[in-house]
Image 1 (cartoon, rainbow, N blue to C red):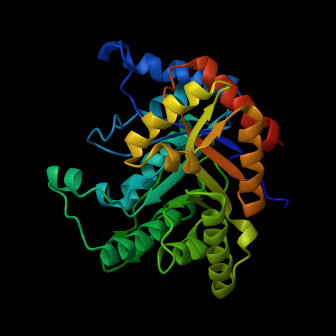
Image 2 (image 1 turned 90 degrees about the horizontal axis):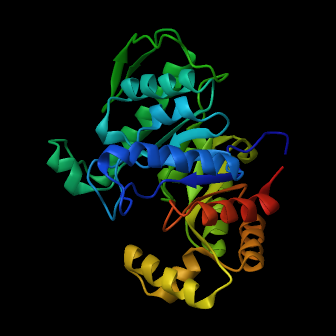
Length: 315
């Protein structure tokens, strides 16, 4: 495949609450992790888009990270379409692209968290309406990246010649990753408009999702190899069975599943076991992996995870 994947080895900030770190030192902690991740071979950094803490998840300053990193792509996995006007979102991502000299990614999804949407006075539409609005939003964002003063009139979103100046550094604008795995509407939307997709689950589940994507691309008259395919999950690399079990118990609590089920959803075990699991995902059609860590402030483990993934997925 001549096209370079969006990412081979990505790191996701899955939380911004660090024990013993005062709020005044929080951003420096985030920066230290970003520097360690780049040095460990991670080629992309991802934040989340939640305005309420959800199992220690919250917003991270992605634009600020653009100014303190040098090589990794930067994206949100994924921005909730309900939170922002899509033309404004495109300008925000363009700002990150300019600051980072072309490293921005637009990650976007339909949104799912009812509580925080209502808390901020925003309408939480039906799933059908949210997906239709997402379709329109992606088209507007693409137009903002590629046209001088686009026009679009839809049922949920409209724009009338908004300007996006300065323009993105990335040729054609930042890649658009559409998050989600719904097979009837979401994956066909990726086939029509996305540059990348992101799935989670075991290798068999991911293989099935990619097969659905390939059929959707065929129906849309598009080459499926144009779409970068990534997997999202938690990575745990350890030689200690006791440490692994303790970590799986923590992960299971976060996910609301038993530790045995958490094992099936994570990249976990010894270095050799994790690399074997990565090969299973590669055989399923995955090009890149985006991982979170239970304790991202453990920089030694961060380095070990980055090295482990890079040895299998590196160019």
